[in-house]
Image (cartoon, rainbow, N blue to C red; front, top):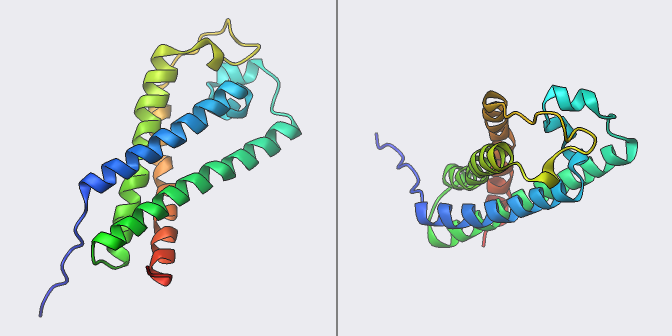
Amino acid sequence: MRRAALPTLDYALILRDGGILAAVLAFYVMGLLRLNPRLFLRQYPDLIRNAVAPNTRVERFAIAFLGFGLFTILWTGVYLSIRHYQAVHTSGFIGFFLHGFAVATVFNVTDWLILDELWLGRIQPRWALMPGAETLPHAIDHNRHFRGFIVGTVPSLVVAAFAALVALRFPI
């Protein structure tokens, strides 16, 4: 009985496409944070969330709409990378899925280590401080950021699976 070969991962393609996707999404997220830090109120520590008014109905709508935009960019980037992988490598669902998941994970790691830990945790630009709570300590909670990274793997799995299925259903 012959065992099926494991798909080949193209690490250069993963790092290139994942890096491009991470840069695009990082600018998107930081642009939204610069535009209105209140869009990220759920991400701030309890001390700060309790010191400011809750999100308004308009802000909640904007969060949902802009969150959909983030997932659209994420899915599109993963899908296009899978298409490029598909043009270069012969593979099935598992290969496409693993490639897509790896590309999405590059963004997830970038979000955790570069955006959360370094930029917002250490550098703390003034424009990222919550309006009305500037005088409160914006202490970084490393455990919370790590949990956010772990939770972020779930959308990465879903996006990769959906993009892989679409690539299989509609081959090049």
